[in-house]
Image (cartoon, rainbow, N blue to C red; front, side, top):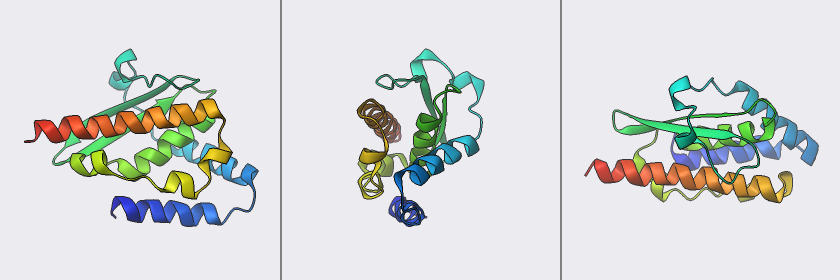
Length: 142
């Protein structure tokens, strides 16, 4: 699936919910399904600054695609769900595609009304870091 196909799939999933509480619960449930992050990535270097809770994001090149790992402290269930959504869309894609991705699903599913302004800032920081990884790995591949 392409990045846009993954985003369209997420939009369809969120369209099934009528109310914000159900959407929020769905985000929490997605976070619970996120695979455990390898311990070597749980470092200060991989911590996302700008999040109100502790969130980590790591990446490694696997062949010609970038694979992401993410986690959040146990009390940060929504943040873990948000990083899970971003990983679902951007993980295992070519670095240059990650760097240039337009993540329209965030607005289309109404993420702005689902999260607090501080979480929205954390979400922006997560996305920014993923795009930085994409740029860094794309530059080293050239």
